[in-house]
Figure 1: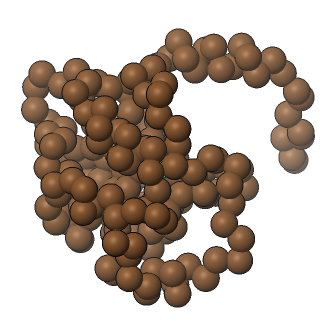
Figure 2: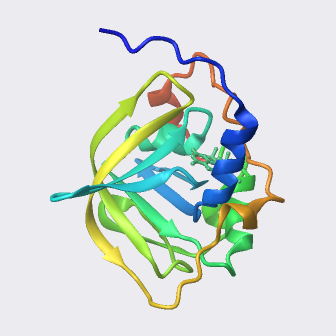
Length: 189
Ligand SMILES: Cc1cc2nc3c(=O)[nH]c(=O)nc-3n(C[C@H](O)[C@H](O)[C@H](O)COP(=O)(O)O)c2cc1C
């Protein structure tokens, strides 16, 4: 039986609750062939205990989503309160226009996933499932295969990013993309 069409509601109250939650922000990175992607994400959470699982939701508008579709691993980097510049680079610009990885220090992680040198707290996920509900974000679930954490992290929250305009609005949807051709193309300089 279908669950029916949700009724309209007060989105201002929803927005206010989300602002009160004030999620810590992460940077999700992925690699497929020569192509690398990375974007800020506020939609992420642990979603399994035994075995442990972690989920991130990526916007269909983002280059990172298109790269992640072809990646076996994702890295989830916790941003620190001092990382506004990284949040601006990965959340306020798109890899469709700029090579973000030429503008920050990173090293190769498991299965080629880029690890941002600045972020001392990072989870590497091996993808186990993907869930596309037909909405604007797709859920990527993974098993943690590596985790590094340095005590003393002061998380960078949604409210700390109020001045950052996302590189892609969630309602943007690339049309008629040939993903395999795109991923074979050299990344932007
Ligand atoms: C505060 C904030 C939260 C965001 N949360 C998400 C998110 O949960 N998932 C997502 O895919 N994009 C999210 N974005 C948007 C991307 O980070 C942004 O559009 C980025 O520029 C996309 O880069 P890309 O095209 O190189 O992947 C967020 C942006 C900001 C500023």
